[in-house]
Length: 130
Image (tube, helix red, strand yellow):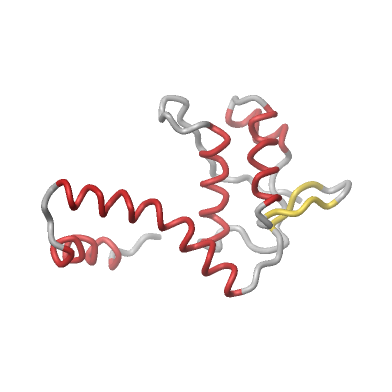
């Protein structure tokens, strides 16, 4: 029924654990590694696998449900909500935007031009990531 989610948490990252979970599930949905209709592991299972409080996982799932990415199916658990192509594009942009902001800030601190940043980024985007 529910697949195992490749999730990991870093308690020392400074980012709350529930936020780490939200971001990772959101990225997996945006990257199409989690398909519409696919069930997520139970809150208890994720909490046990990651050795975190079940309330932390519950909070992450609730946020994802509120945002329309997950839906509760009574008696079966949480599954990925159906998303249209436009919604999926928005999710992808939402996942990528904060990362790009970090890159832009670092580039400014290093006095790099947009061209230099693109030249550095392009080979990374062209790598085969299987």
